[in-house]
Length: 133
Image (cartoon, rainbow, N blue to C red):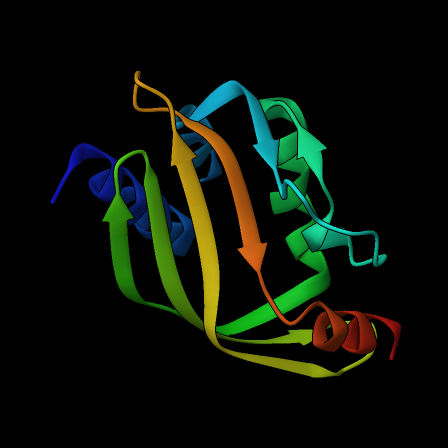
């Protein structure tokens, strides 16, 4: 397992503990969070630029209750790490559930081992419908 794959594992472990500072420390100061995302109004899937803005992603998760978050596979090719995640959560304001099987997370690293780009490849329609109720 390479340093980049290990970093992704450590990020998911920190996420499970609610240890956001450890996650943010693994991000480049100018990280592109949710790069390439089209507008859809879902707070936790918004494009953000920079470590401080990326921290707002974790703040946005207060809108949901995560029941299950299971990284199933971590795949790597050069500076890119891809993770497949099974996820179940409820949007608190609407009571609607979102179930993702094989939601894909794309992590791109620089030579210093910091995350420079990240995105969720998720069923944004399902997330948006659950968020809007």
